[in-house]
Length: 94
Image (tube, rainbow, N blue to C red):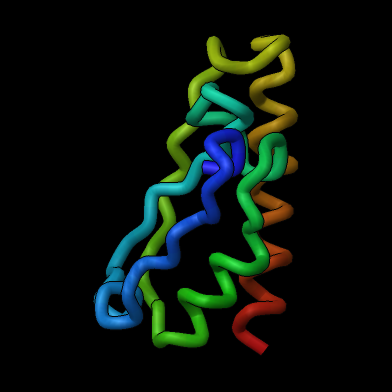
């Protein structure tokens, strides 16, 4: 969105309050499905928004190795992403 000179849209609160599961992946320019924390998604902002509005569902990490600059880094990136998301989720729940 920023590349087009637009702000990121925030879904209506009515929608946010009804989220029961969330597919997570990061993005960089036109590349999607990167491990969280390796792109530009503001994870702390979005996860806090979910938890402040009663989210208690599950997360499904949707990432693919062939989208990464170095696919050999896939497993370490997944481990780092899981640790990052866990840390942010713990903070958001406080």
